[in-house]
Image (cartoon, rainbow, N blue to C red):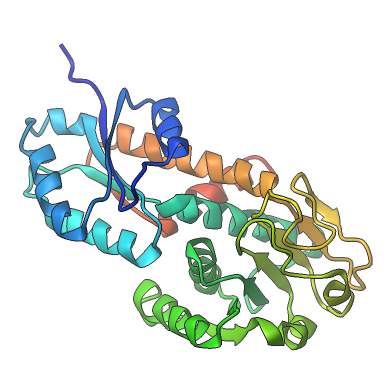
Length: 302
């Protein structure tokens, strides 16, 4: 009898996300086993318990998902998991803390599509403000966009924190091949004057861009908001909007709401979970792979 498909789901939080469990089972995993409050030092032992309990053939029906709340911690745990493998005893691993990697990938992919369809241009050379960008979604979106050639500035309430996060994104997640800058929320009125794109990635229920600031953005093209909880993160952008013109935008900017982004996020996460199911060889998946599949989905459904 074939062994069941088992996904071992690790999180540093006290609860595993029900969203991620539903996604795993809907993607075809038969069993999603939670491991909560996981310390990085425990990853090696958990991984090796998983890989040595099955034959190499049986391990094709085994994989590991890494959740949690922090981008760096999830990426570190992904590395720890990969380093714990003992070929041919090896399984696939997918990191997506708080769903941030697939959410960020979905947002950047749909913004990229909007730029091409509405303005006949790309992310290359565009000025992006990641408002509330010090969190996991903002970090991942900043790195993805910067790798695509954009000039990204992470905006936070505390400038010193924004600067630390920008450096982390540039050096650790970007490998030193990109340069992401930082700015204080108090100064976004100045930054918006030269912004082409805005990512609103802050906490739910907080407006990060006002009607007055939109009216003061002469070259704004696309504003994307991941917040589905009223009030919207960007004034005039509804959760259901998908490239809808933003009222009173002097540049004809379009808005992309949380549910439009969420649809692409859902597809990206589903495809990566299925990728682990179908892979002949182990794969190690993060925000870059999420962007690849999000781009594919957006292109295929243009």
